Amino acid sequence: MAKKAVQRQGFKTGEYVVYPAHGVGQITEFEEQEVAGFALELFVIYFAKDKMTLRVPIPKIESVGMRKLADPETVEKSLKTVQGRARVKRTMWSRRAQEYDAKINSGDLILIAEVVRDLFRSDTQPEQSYSERQLYEAALERMARELSVTRKITETEAVNLIEANLALGPRRGPKPEGEEDDKEDAA
Image (cartoon, rainbow, N blue to C red; front, side, top):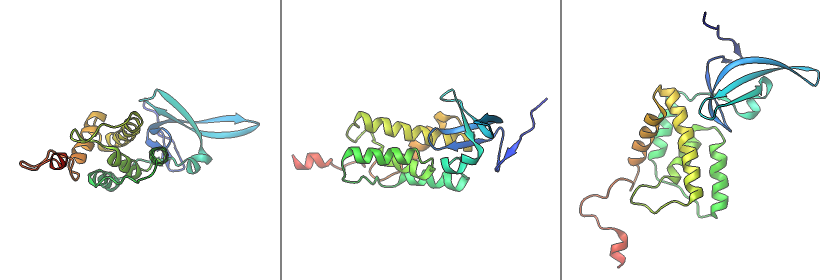
């Protein structure tokens, strides 16, 4: 016999949600626990990729930024965002890294797409540092997880979709025939 979906605060069991600090998880149940003599209702969210279960007090969902999955328009906007020109500030890497990390952990699909766009390196571009690569992969994974659930495709297909959109961005694809490399002109 199938379990009936229970609903609280507009969220229901079995539904996928975005928890900003961890990405996409599934609400498996609602639970009541007694904490310091008070009854507390909790969402139980399972993150399959991390094999992690999180219990979130229902009154805290707004303050932690938990949200429903992005709608189709937001998903399309995120794919358009990765096609844009990278916007890299001329500040110290440590400061930029903090900003990228904050965007990834915001849970906002568009902000995560901006990180993917800004940190993406094509084969023709210079190598990334280890920390750049880590942040890029974290953002790509978060974005791919949400796209895979919203589009009902595998995470690998979602990564391929994101990378295909990245390739549509300015100066990322192979150079047109006959176009010289800037380094050769300077030589």
